[in-house]
Image (tube, rainbow, N blue to C red; front, side):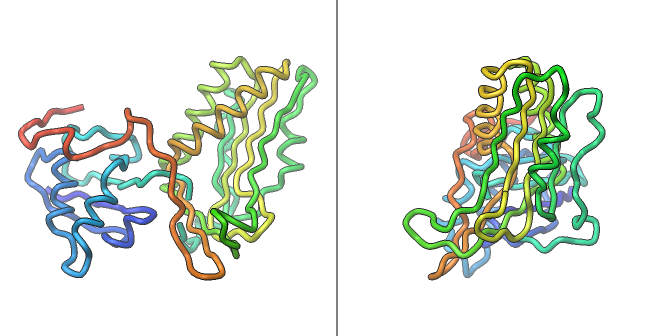
Length: 264
């Protein structure tokens, strides 16, 4: 069988952006990772690739997968290093604001955009007469990171999966904290110093719930939503070290013996 493998972030350095991989029928996610390790390009350090594959998450058809999940012919497999930051040129369909307007009844809005985020407009649109508080997290690009002057950042995402995860986080925050509305928008592409990279707006009848929900949303987004960042400094460029995935999402081939195959 054949599966399409898409690598993001630092994994593209070793594996390229996308490739078709042929595997035995019923091969698992863990076996795919072992195959990739074994077939690493001759000019890439095998140890470095193996280290890069540890602690990653894997998406199968834009849903998080386990190490023992069996793959099917035609599956799309995303290899997701720890998140929070990459560079990818926008295609024709990616130049418009992708704020999802399909969740009006749920009061959960999520979007990825290659355009400037209009924070003032989004905050104004979130307010309603029944709200006693609107809490905003406006993440901006600073001019330094880890003691090095920063020139700019580049963001990329596994877009379909990122939007699904953002919508789900919005629903969880709404139900968990009892807030009325959640809006989340993340920028893609190149960002200069001072630009907004992510905006979260939480509207609620009470301020405590709005504060708690907003803090939970940004912290969880940074851990689980497949968005990556490349930092360009005055003396070079590196992929930002992402926050580790929660143990329930991280995948390692060692988790599953080769003979352990089952349908999820």
